[in-house]
Amino acid sequence: MVGINAFIDEGLGNSSYVVDLGDRRGLVVDPARESKPYREFAETSGLTLAYAVETHLHADFVSGSRELAAVGATVIAPGAAELEFPHRPLHDGEAVDLGGLRLEALGTPGHTPEHLGYLLDDGTRPVALFSGGALLPGAVARTDLISPDRTEPLARSLYRALHERILVLPDDLPVYPTHGAGSFCSTASDGERTTTIGRERAANPLLAAPDEDAFVALLLGGLGTYPTYFGGLREVNRRGPRVYGTYPALAVLTVDEVERRVRDGAELIDVRPMEAFAAGHVPGSLSIALRPSFESWLGWLGPADRPLIFVLDPDQDRAELVRQSLGIGYEQLVGELVGGVDAWRETGRSLARTELVRTLDPERDPVVDVRQRVEYAAGHLPGARSTELGTLVGPAISELSGQATFMCGHGERAMTAASLAERSGREAAVFVGGPDQWARRSGRPLAHG
Image (cartoon, rainbow, N blue to C red; front, side):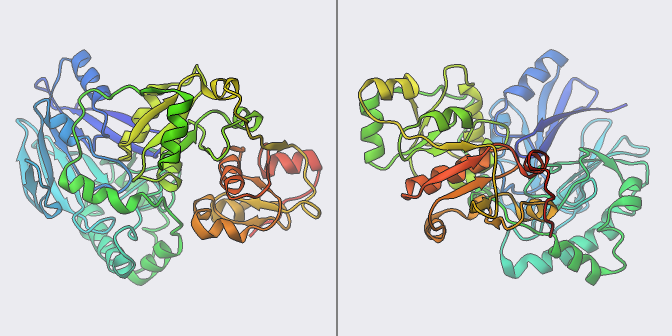
């Protein structure tokens, strides 16, 4: 029995895997940037991490293969990725002898042009498929991350790869995907992290498409928006990201230092819970509450090319903030405001506040719903305007007129939207809760579509 252990990033919706090769060596599939969890697991399990395997050039996270290479792992990656650091390139049909186990590369272009799946067998039968983004529980990964003109050709390549390379495998074969529930790389998900070939053959709606044209139409019709930082990480991962070993701690900055740095172009990001931000925050700061999805919204709305300064509460996890930021390639972490908003207030500087509301009359109060369009379609306040949070940057914020009440599923995204509106000179309020809470409190039905 091959031991396969999953490491899940709930915020990005991704999974990486440590495979126990049975001879005190381990193999890591699609590692995240921070290598500490894999190293600690290997130490407690008596393993040496011998290999780091990449299925494709990732757009949503910085690969950890170079971090593992720095402690002795051999990097295995698609030859077509053309990595600029030492690695063993593989192409479709090539295999690596792992000593009792064999890892075969399956050419599965679609999610990306260079994409490989990896079939692990024990010499008598296949025991696992690491599918990357080629096949997910109830879905496949999107094909529109390279360029608009390649979206449909990649979708057609994926259809052929699925039918020629993956669906010919045994129905009982376990499938371990990289992307899953919560991933912006996924077209959809049934919530499961792993699956089998037979389960997907029977239940995956994309695999039920009668032909290639129908598959392409169904796949492309389900594509939504994705974070803007996706545009830069493939190249970062191809060149090879900086190796840290141990992540640095956040430096502390005085009020005067923060004010000077912001004046010189730094971005001030308040990661406290929405209620704390509403009660008092540094004027002009961007609210992105520290939670599992922090990294996605930082990558969507925070500038990657400017220094970042953070405002935290005393009990918040600084190491988690650094992990999420570096995990998506945000390297310019200048530090945090020492003493937080209390220190700011104690110097005589003013704080801004944001109104929180728990009742709404959408016929009287302008409501802006900042959830994804698919969430909005599933149920929203009658008359609410749909404006995805990720679009509220640059000139788009000027399209909002007058005071608006922002809402999302809980309140965190709405507070981010309110902070964007406020820094552009507009008044904003935030509804605490989401459409379901509004419906229960008001006794009125939601609109759909």
